[in-house]
Structures are given as C-alpha cells and as structure tokens.
Image (cartoon, rainbow, N blue to C red; front, side):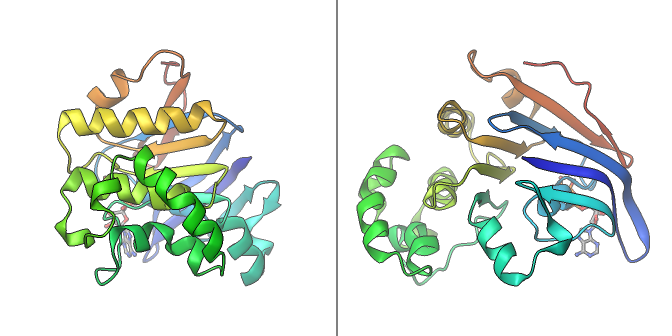
Length: 224
Ligand SMILES: Nc1ncnc2c1ncn2[C@@H]1O[C@H](COP(=O)(O)OP(=O)(O)OP(=O)(O)O)[C@@H](O)[C@H]1O
C-alpha cells in the first residue's frame, strides 16, 4: 500500500535519512518512535505526499508519488487521513464545520451532513459540535482532528503525536478509536514519543514499532 524504496531526505543540504526503505501493508498498524528531531514528521509527510523524496521512490497505493500531477496527488491524498501534531483548525468555523471541511470543500455537502452526527458521536463530541475549536480541551481537539481525518473514509490514517498534549485517560480513549479504525481494515501509522502508550495497545491488534534514530530506521521492533 505505502512503500518507501531507498528514500533520502534532508534540509539545507544536511541529510536527515538516506536510503530508507519501508513497506506498510494494507490493514497494518505501526508506531513510529524516535528522539525529537529524528525525522518522524518528515517521514510521515513523505508518506502522504506532502514532501517529495529527494532520492529514491515513494509509492502510494501502487503509484510513484514523484510522477503524480497535482490532480493525482489530490486524489491520492483523499485516501489518506492525517491528524496533525497541532490539529490545524480554522478558528472561525465550528467544531462540526471543521470536521466536515474535507467533504464540503469537495462539494459533497449532503454526504457531510449525513456522516457528521455519527462521527461526532463516535468521538464523543456531539455536545461540542457548535463550539469553536479554541473552546475545546486538548483531548477534545485531538478527537475532533481524528474525526476530520476520517470523514472521507480514508484507507490510510497517519497521526503525528495524537496524544501529545492530553492526559493518560484521553490518550487511552484516542488509542481505542484508532484501534477500532484498524479493526475496520484501515492502515494506521502513528508517530509518538510515548512508549507507555505503545505498551498499552489492546490485544487483538498486531501493531509493530518502527524506531527512527540517527538516520536509520529499525524495523526489528517486536510485534505487540
Ligand atoms: N522545513 C524545515 N526546514 C529546515 N529544517 C527542518 C524543517 N522541518 C524539519 N526540519 C528539521 O529536521 C529535523 C527533523 O524534524 P522532524 O520534525 O521531522 O523531527 P521529529 O522526529 O518529528 O521531531 P519531534 O519529535 O520533535 O516532533 C529537525 O532537526 C528539524 O529542525
């Protein structure tokens, strides 16, 4: 589904990683760990075509990401839901409008209306639907960001530190939601510093841990 083949990337002429290869099979669940600055966000951005490999090849759903034109990139990215580290809401829109945004900007307004209440219930935000994002707690914002990431029914969900600013109970709640998505067949990739979180993954999900450090990706992490 998602393949990185000998990919290199760096900033300002300084390599961050070189000749990195990775394959994420459909329906798999991976955590990406590593110290701050190791390049986790950069690796995630390569996986959703927000960055292009400087060397090597990224294949998304079987297509070479470097050969896609803008329309094809947009179509491919509709199959990928991203939960950003900082959520990235539009502050003047309500929680419900933010969650529905990927559908409404695609002109699928009726679909947005149909999906929204089920999605708000799923993430436990039905009562906050008409509030502004800045009125939500950290955990509520993260759940809203997850709802927005899945409203297009993506095949692949990428989350960058989804539990970064939330307490333990809320982390568990977010992980339960991500686990449910995996059970529905979605491929999941989560970057996190939180090793405790990884250890608590519930049985029934075979998650693997990838460790990025010093430009190398260790994929030998035991299956959880
Ligand atoms: N746009 C950019 N321009 C220049 N350097 C960048 C840019 N984005 C990231 N970097 C640098 O690349 C390195 C890796 O950044 P990245 O955000 O990918 O790491 P990370 O592992 O996700 O870190 P963290 O865990 O702190 O979020 C860092 O040293 C960062 O400063």
